View (spheres, rainbow, N blue to C red):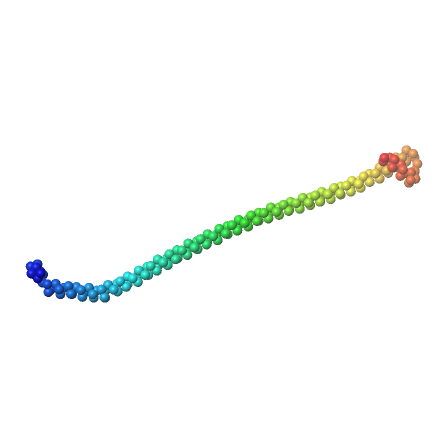
Length: 162
């Protein structure tokens, strides 16, 4: 084999020395360069993974927050709608009560006016009867040309009115 290597122009002693040098260099690089670089890369990878995990957690919290916000808005809208409906119902109720109260007051005023009209009517009729009675007495005096006493006046007035 050494002949074959000599024919190719390779010195086997030099080749063995180069292989040993390569292995030593490989060991030194592994120990002092590749190891620390791997450690730095692992740290960076862990930081990136932690950053991604934190970002995912923040995204989940944001989604939960948005869900809660939507739920709060939905509840607020529902409550607002209920309040408006209650206010509308209360307004209708108040409107009905006011209308009924106004109707009752109007009815009361009408009844009062009817009573007052009836009283005035009776008063007027009494005054007219009294006046007619006086006119009848005056007419009777003129016709009879004499004054009749109070009892006869009353009888004549009643006959005339009938």
